[in-house]
Length: 66
Image 1 (cartoon, helix red, strand yellow):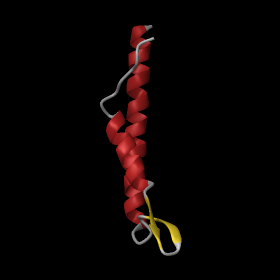
Image 2: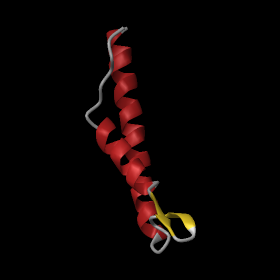
Image 3: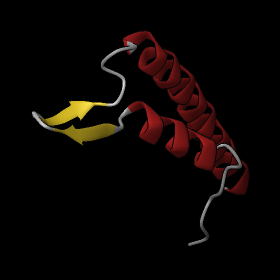
């Protein structure tokens, strides 16, 4: 079985990781985006859009191969 690759996979993972970042401070673990939650929401929305495109690309390639 061949691996199906999409050029959008890496940016989708990267943006999702950045949106889910956290930091350690004196009170324990806190969200990196606690002061600016709209930044995390924008990154999450763009990441979800990329994930949709990744899945469409993979499904299209899989259907063509069959």
